[in-house]
Image: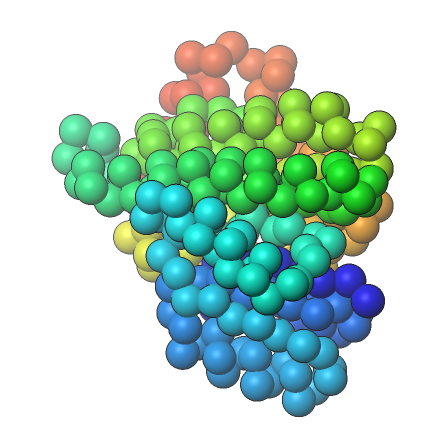
Length: 258
């Protein structure tokens, strides 16, 4: 029986990933700020799937939060077979007007915590000669994003970092998958204050469950980059053949308030 650690597991894609793993018989370590939501999910999954769930309430944007979680897991003698770095958030608005403290939290969560978790658990996986990591990026990783400049940049980091690490460890029995969903029906848009963006307003978006099921399958297969949806794949591929200045202008037009 495998154990999956999932960050940002209290809602959206993270919550659905927890349900997918539990349905496959995996034990779970769930991490998020909202401990009460995690405990509700723990009860639900243990009752439905007879799986073991350990929940940790932690704000991963705080310094060394990943180390604290890792140390707690070690004390519990839990072996993590699947690491899923899903926690992250965005912010919508012109960079000159957005809040620096929120952006610093975003960088700490989207980049620093993800990188530290990968470092810590990857060493154990390489030592065992087995394990899988999935880092959740976004189709935002493939271009610059006016009105969400810092968010797009953090996801570009996740993609670049994860592809490199996958190359380094694949011959050691470990794979690193980067999941790149497009806009998804979840709590992300509300948290990023982007409900009025042309990217999501009045659009029918894929559900978090659909993205989670796709991501799980891609991770199990050991896919390096997994872009959800044909339209998203085509858009990501087209960026390579389009002048960067034009890509930025198009992205701005899509992102602007509808």
